[in-house]
Amino acid sequence: MAMFLFKKNISEEKKQSRVKNRRVHLANERTFLAWMRTSLGIMAFGFIVEKFLIFPLQDKAGSAQHIQQIGGKCECLRYFGLFLIFLGAAAAILSTYRFLKTEKEISENTFRPTVAPDVLLALLLGSIGVLLVIYLINAV
Image (cartoon, rainbow, N blue to C red; front, side, top):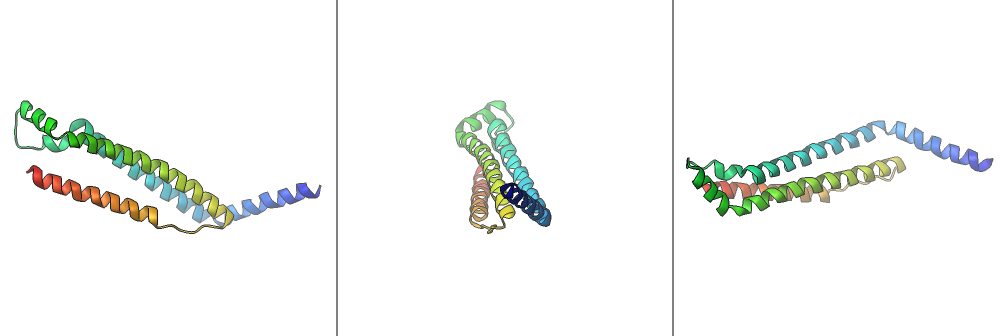
């Protein structure tokens, strides 16, 4: 009987902790959804680059043969598009893991913020932006 009461107290304590930290849980959910939107955007951009080879199509040449020739020379764009799709999928998986981990830590009142994943992603996306600028400057 005492074990049953003890378990009931633990679940009530967790429930009260969750209600008490309602704003923190909701902020964690908003952050997770923002990561999902970001990963979807990265994957969509990668799909456009890979499928339509959007950068070579912006060349001033008008013939389809020239566009195809540019597309053949820029095989690296296909790999870049696939890399962006992979990066977006990886961001979705990692954000799901981070969301679940943070939810658990908030519930257990052991949450400690981490900066390393955010800084690494910012450096990676910044590097991709710089590479795109270099590519576009050289393509003109």
